[in-house]
Length: 173
Image 1 (cartoon, one colour):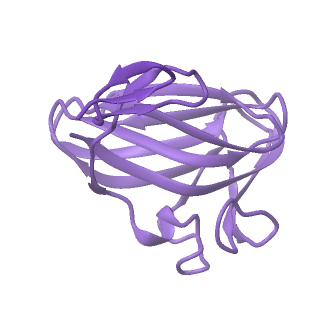
Image 2 (cartoon, rainbow, N blue to C red):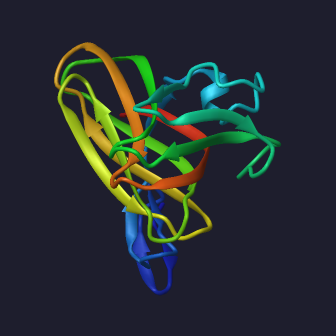
């Protein structure tokens, strides 16, 4: 049945986006494609299992900051080159299928982070840190049946420390 919200009729399959005030289609997502340790930002095992350093990023399971649980993935970049950070590899994907990548990030204010999903061609989403925990998400479409890799790295050459937590990678149904 349609319901009335703010004097506007819409069907229950639509949600209300409090940030924009617009009705948005309710997302239907498939099962989680990432391991439990990656989803929990290292809370599950207390290690960096499932994450790999990329171009000099130093990774650790940290209790310094966490969006949820007790731990998050701490990434320290030395600032000696661009695109320093992490990679999550070997995620099976289907041909021409949209996937939603999401996570929470605590990035220093004004630092730019590149979030790339490659399967095998890459699609990139840039976001700028605020110094607070922020949700980050975007949808990418796989080009072929293969395995995808997710890169989360600095866009510019800068020595920073950032934290990542509550990862998700799901097929958009």
